[in-house]
Image (cartoon, rainbow, N blue to C red):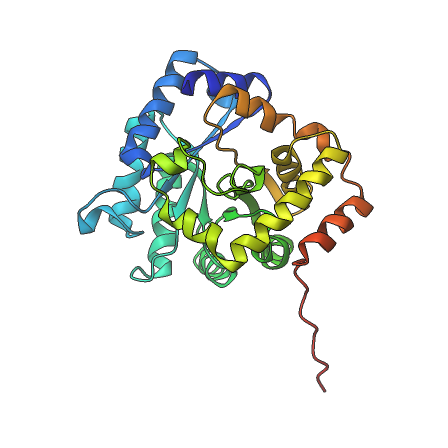
Length: 301
C-alpha cells in the first residue's frame, strides 16, 4: 500500500516525501527508503525530508545536541538508503541545548553533505529568529523552513507570525494536519465510529476533544463547511486542503493519506483552489470567526 500511495503521488506531480526518525520507531524511514530504491526514480526529481529529535530511549538518543543531530541523521540516512536528505528538521525546540550548538551542528551536517538545508518544526517565531541571528553572527547556515500545524481551527501562527519571518528572513512554511486528524472530513460528526482507526487505537485525546465545548462548537462549524463544499461540488476534505493551499505564506501542504483512494481525493483539491474567490474566503472566515488580527501599533514620541 505504501508503494502504491507513493507511486500515485509521484506520478501526479508530488515531489516531496516527509518522514521522521520517530515515525514507527524508524520503520517509516526504512519503508520509504526501500520504495525509493525499488522505483529508481532520479534522485534529483524528488525531495526527501526527515526530522530529528526522538531517536531512541536513551538520554543521548534524543534532543538536539550536536551528538544526536549527527548520529540521528546518520541513522536516518542508513534507513533511507540515501546519501543525503534535502531538508533535516529539528522536530521541536530543545531548551536543554544552547541554540548556537544546534545551529553549528546543522551547519556541520550540511557541510558534510548529509543534508542540503535545515529547518524547524513546531518552533515559535522567537526561536526561529534566534537561530537565524546566531547563523548570521557566526557565518553559519540559517533555517529555511518551519513545519507548522495549520487548518481551519489553527491559524494564528501561519497567518500572523510566520509571514513576518518570511518577509524578514525568507523562512517558508510547510504545513501539516490540514484535516485536523480527520475531524474536518465530517467522519467524527457523530462521535468516533466503531471500527475506525481512531477507535481501534484508542485515541482518548480525540474523544476528549470531540466531547469538549470547544470541540462541539467546531463540529457544528464543520457541518456548515460541508454545505459550502457541496456548493463547490467537492468534498469537505478537498475544501479544507484547498483552503490551506490558498494561503500565501504556505509553501506546501503535507498530506497523510493511508490509501490510494484517499490520496486521489486529496490531490483533486487542486481543482478547487481556483474556486476559492475572495468573497468565498470571506464567507468561510465569517463562519469560522477566528481570523487572526494583527495587533495595532502604538504611537510613540
